[in-house]
Length: 126
Image (cartoon, rainbow, N blue to C red):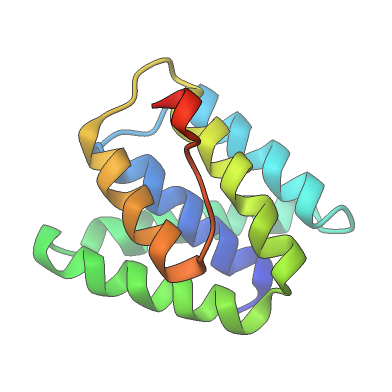
């Protein structure tokens, strides 16, 4: 798995944690990918986005947390600390982008914060 794929899986996991993905969330993901990986081809990224949607939707709810743990482990092994720290504000933007913050999104971000040792939601955003 490439770094772009791993980050895409992470973002799509958060998007699908409330069982839907909005246009605003997808645009937030697209912007984040372009900032983290400016040399990446958009067409290739779109393929990763579609694949991650299919893969994550196949997992039953009780197995998704194990999958999220694997995604975080992969990110920790592929990305440097600087890029991992950038994920916090980017994921915060993602979950706020559609104007509705669901408890399932918060639950996913709590796990991600712990596994990646980042802060996604600051106290002022709570």
